[in-house]
Length: 195
Image (tube, rainbow, N blue to C red):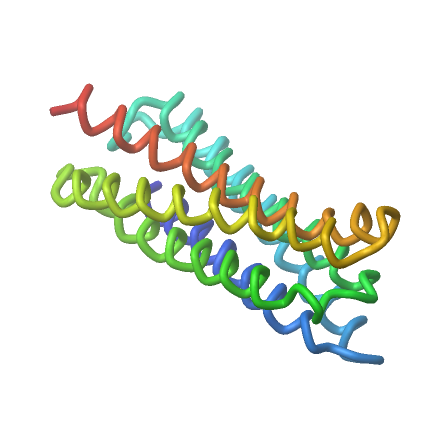
């Protein structure tokens, strides 16, 4: 079961990769990346459904069923927001003009996914989860600051209609980071209640 959660973290990483590759993409590459993110979405949904099914039908679980569902949901939501980010980037003519903030957010989300992959595999023993929570808290603050600066730049440099169009990317990245933060809060709650 914990390996399924780790695989969901991997899907977040894959979605981050697609977002990163979409920034400079042109022509046929845009369509290829849209197809890849669609496949990632399908795989994420399959893993999330698999986690729910296993939680209902398995008797010896490392965590309560509701905890597995919540953790799986947060990871699936992060991946979904990144899928929407790819779609927003695909139609954003200004995606390179604010690429630095997008890249910074993607780097933070990638780090969050990597830390989370390790953390969910440690839920059986609860070792190292305090450090995980602290690192995720630091990354959360960083993503919040980057989001605010990104929004300000968009409205300062673009016409209002263009800024709102480009804001879809910033919003989806922000929501993906928030889903990863919610995952960290849930891991923190589990580590306290199970200790």
